[in-house]
Image (cartoon, rainbow, N blue to C red; front, side, top):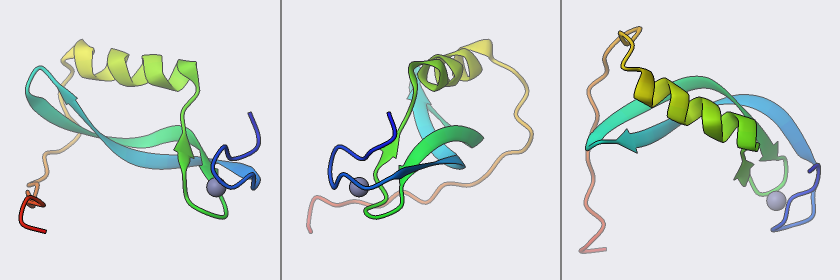
Length: 77
Ligand SMILES: [Zn+2]
């Protein structure tokens, strides 16, 4: 895939950060390969990247560091 499904613009291979929930715990995954639309910013993952995300969160490895996450509520918006 090299074109955006939303706006038909060209996609660019980039390394991005993504948050992923697994078993009630949230993980921040950095340097994840993704295809990003240059026009609208839509993000696409290959099946390989999807597998990689699951592999990383399931592995239970020691995190490289721990961050504090700010939680926002959109229910009153
Ligand atoms: Zn797009």
